Length: 533
Ligand SMILES: Cc1cc2nc3c(=O)[nH]c(=O)nc-3n(C[C@H](O)[C@H](O)[C@H](O)COP(=O)(O)OP(=O)(O)OC[C@H]3O[C@@H](n4cnc5c(N)ncnc54)[C@H](O)[C@@H]3O)c2cc1C
Image 1: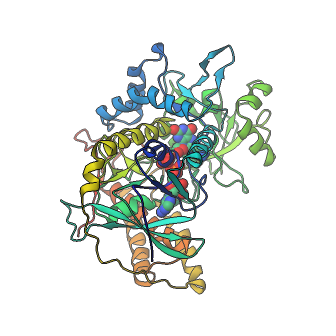
Image 2: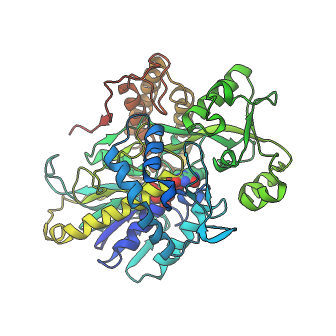
Image 3: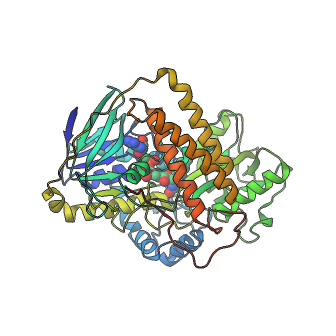
């Protein structure tokens, strides 16, 4: 088996992974592993922008308050404070790396700021309506230019290697097993520091805005290594994904509602006043999502509509070029027709529990970005706070790694006897794999979705556990096949979501339990799951 050594292994090439790589590049050799092409990730799909208080009259305290209101009482106030106050410095990093945020046409010295749901001020920086792509492209270019960063595409991390004799108190990570999907080979990567930056898990649901890469791999790896996983029940559903038989996972950005878009039911009537008479279309996402879900259930309609035809056509084309072009491709001219939309799984507020340095329960294992649970989002993420979180926490992790690097390098980690994975050919079994993928995603959508009940969750857990047992009995080895490996991660992560949801007997933020419709004020900030060894 090929063994490759570096100073830092980063799993994932979205904003979290690449910004951490760019920070660490002067401290040693950085290896970035990514399971598809470098830009296949959620970061590249982000449209709206990145929230940040840049000007005095925009107030840190108001951004803090908006974040905490959206988080419905579960945000960690110290983390909220840290992220919001460090934001401006991290925006400077992005500017230095070459991200050209849009300027205000009337005052080009200032950035053009936009408003999104749950924000009391315009504070979202953006690049047209393709902010994520602009950020990702700038960071890729910087990473490719750096002689100390190796970007390895089609490399799937599938197991963390822990120190021999690891116990939950003294565990350290030594590296990671990887499948090179092009060469069909297993490789072993070793380094004093490993960072998981693998993004979210939206693919656990039938309808999602997420890219195909969002199968929760890093969360599964960390769970199997004994780390605590927190708040997995808090899945944010985006209220507005394009509803069209040929459109796969296309998001209609929150910014359209920020600019005056109105939601209409199947009869063409506005309805948000019934659910949030003050904030209307700009209520936090969980409220808008449940309102749409209720309208759909009551009317039996397949979608609702988002109408921005009241805005000048030229402005819409200039402000939302990507959404305009994409909808037009599907025969919808958004300047003259309302857009058919439905909710879809969008963002995972929970994940691998980390401290304010992005450190997991294993001191030389870090987790940054959507795969982590830092305490920022609480029960529901405020729009455009996730790119901010990723870039702030990659800097926090960098500071801790820089401080402790000598120590990590001193540890002479005893490697376990390395196992040569068994590789099996599964061509004729492919149908079982795709079948299980489909069943899990449907169970999650139908039973662990926008509105839940304990009975639905218990039923879902039984069915998912059965599928997990079947996977363990039949596909327990390592396969040189992305679908099989992702199914293993996805099924575990689906189980963690259901188990967390069953732990939280209250309705809060994105977790809405019909049989416990109220908040429990003796709340716990985190629901925790940890593997017993
Ligand atoms: C459509 C859409 C629009 C959004 N809009 C906004 C917005 O406007 N503002 C905002 O703040 N947030 C937005 N978000 C959320 C935000 O984009 C994500 O939370 C953020 O980009 C996550 O960054 P990340 O680096 O953690 O993960 P990602 O960008 O998803 O990167 C994860 C990387 O890990 C890799 N990976 C995963 N598993 C493995 C493995 N086993 N081995 C190797 N590599 C692996 C993937 O291939 C990928 O490269 C949006 C999300 C979506 C889906």
